[in-house]
Image (cartoon, rainbow, N blue to C red):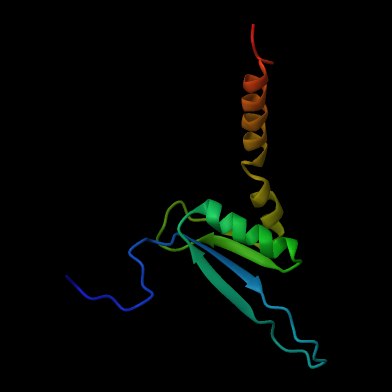
Length: 106
């Protein structure tokens, strides 16, 4: 069995989320620092991006090369990306609740 360095995972990370690290309040105008984390699934990436976006940070995201289809989401596209799929999830949840209460019976 081949030894692997600690911290390396066999799972492939396909998505990345980059976010701006807030400044410490200094008056000197410096380049803004950023941090990037990688994720195995788009849902994991979205959940993390949503948290950072809701904190008021500038967020970008996308797929890691060579994953296809390639997606790169600029900060102005993040809100619509976070909304993708939420409407379908809400409709499924409402349908499920109606089924439980008998609201969809003929």
